[in-house]
Image (cartoon, rainbow, N blue to C red):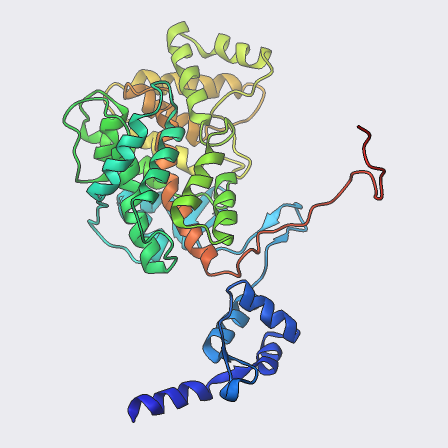
Length: 419
């Protein structure tokens, strides 16, 4: 009896096609378009006449449709997407309203990632990689040519890990968070170790160090690496993050969304920028002065790496926080001096400040890491931010990241091309 009463109650809450269209503010045929796209589910009405719709599901869709869509900013002409994750304001930035540099100074990378995903601080949390995911990711990465770059390795590891996860198509928040907590350590574990004795547990920064440097890490260096990861977790709608949101808008699973971000990250104007600064600092150290190095960069028509950021009129707050920690790293003094020399030399005519790429380059040079290590740090760190944006985009209407092209080709009809 109770089950029958619940069924009748549930049925009474269902809406007709006309009522659904009125609630959504659309035509009845649009309601069926929502059904075909999987945004609504329907059920035949009593006696098999017409379709009915769950009230709560319709109301949820109406709320999503009322949210501000992707649009162009009148001031800049660039895309504008509402987000609750990161705010950049003057020379500071915030994660969920909290100063991001202060968060990174007081909390581990994993704790900051959890804050970004859930708005809840979980002190002491560490991420653990499933053995099956690590095994398949290591096999896939191990099959790549020796010269393969770090972003390619991470992208292959992400795809391989996806194949080992039969639940990857579950896009619920709980499932995606589970994916995030296992994917990030899997990416780190898949990197070929630079030395023996790589830890498989403990803070992620400790595990990542073994994949980046052959040296034994001191506490100051590990703290600098962990803080760098936390500082780089997210930075609003950077190019790679926009790619992630486009993938999530099409309801790609989290592994695929992260893979989209890694594809964009490889560009020299984004994640690979620290590698250019790394090579520049080695050149400054080798030649004993920044002047000839800066001169060569400018003569070749290139920007001096590691300087300036279009979102910060003053100093990049991420660079400021990381430079302060690098002061405590043993052996970093000459590299810090080289970085300051670059800034001072360039600032004679152009008032540019150091950005996080230069600070990251100081860390990688001082730690004896390869020039691509900064790109790896950036990619691992930003994976957490991509997951946050993936979750946020899953809560929006599907396929909203679909701008209209402005066709500028020849007007039809045109004659068929000749053979």
